[in-house]
Every structure is written in C-alpha cells, then in structure tokens.
Amino acid sequence: KMQELGIESNAKTFRTLIMGTVKSAEGDLETAESWYQQALEAGFPLSAGDFEEIIDAALARNNVESAAFWYKKSANEFRLPTEVFNQLLSRAAQLEGFSMAASLFAEFGAGITPNVETFNTMMLAAARNGDTAAAEIWYTRAQGAGCKPDELTYQALINAASKKGDLAAAEAWLRQAEEVGIKPTLKMLNSLMAAASRDGDFQLASGWFHRMEGFN
Image 1 (cartoon, one colour):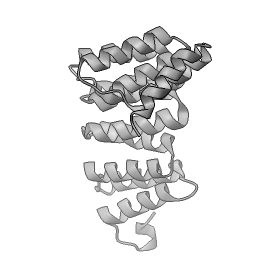
Image 2 (cartoon, rainbow, N blue to C red; image 1 turned 180 degrees about the horizontal axis):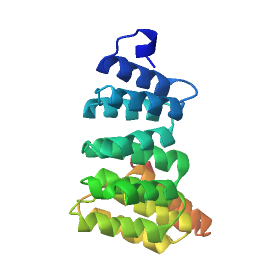
Image 3 (cartoon, rainbow, N blue to C red; image 1 turned 45 degrees about the horizontal axis):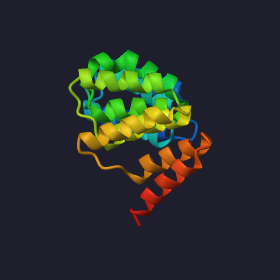
C-alpha cells in the first residue's frame, strides 16, 4: 500500500498508475484493477474523462479485453459518449470478429444511443464473413433506430452479398443506394466486379470494370 510506504496519494497519482499499467507492454489487467480499487478505497474515483483516456490507451495497444473491462467499469457510473463505444466496437470487430462485436453490443447496447456508425460497424463485421443475413438484420435495426443509411452502409451490404456470391442482391443494394442519392464508390463497384468474376460472368465483370474507369 502506498500509505505504508509513506507516499501521499491523490487522484492524479492513481490515474497515472492505472494509465501506466494499461499502456505497458504486458497490459496487466489485474494490477490495473488493483490500483483502481485502491483509488476507490482512498476516496479518489475516476472521472468520465479518466475512463475515456484509459479505454483509448487500451485500444491503442489493441487490447480489446482491457478496453471492454474499463468500459464496463465506466458504465456503472457514467454514460460515456457513443463515439467511445463505437471505437471499442470497431476495434473488437477488426481484431476479434463479428461474434465479439455482437457480444459487446448485447452487453452495452442498452446503455448507449447507437448511431449510423455503430450499425455500420456491425454490418461491416458481418460483411467480412459474407454473412448477408446478419448484415441485413443490422440494417433493419439501424432503420428501426431512425439512423439514415450512408455510403458505408451500402458498401457493407454490397460487400456482404458479393462475398456470399449473391450478385443479384449486391446489384439490388447498389440500385437502392443510387435511388436514395448515394453515388457508387470504387469499393462498391470493385465488390460487384469481383462477384461477377467469381460467378464466371466475365462480360458483366468487364462492364463493372469499365464503370470503375470513369473514376480515374
């Protein structure tokens, strides 16, 4: 204990110790939690800003487990900005996959106000697996939450359908994007070209390729 060593502690002391542990190569969660408990016992709880910085530090080291732990701790006392959760969700999806991201949303989703970025992250994670059903479920949930789909939304849906080999669905999503005023992007067209190539329709793939040339 710091008192036993004759060290006078304050909120900044504990915050520095926790941050140092989180940023270390080992990212020792047990030690960081011990400092956190000592801070509480000494009457120095962390602020919302402290939690945000600690979560950011954990994510900077790609330590999703640590970031999720500190996010859970913060949720007991504060309602952090949706952007903080989105960063955690995005890194979890990138490093651990769709299942981990879905698990985090199930645990913390009720405590946030999800926005289009939140739902896009889930759709993109589903798209990486070619899981069109999951991507479409999250699209429906986004609509139910009143989130307006954007370019990234349709990119995820097109990519999911293309990876699954459902060229008709991918083309349908592109048409829908255009109908709501979203211009096709190179990534969208590249997904369609790749899907057509995998389907053996090289004439259609060539057509998508020539459409891509218009971006140069």
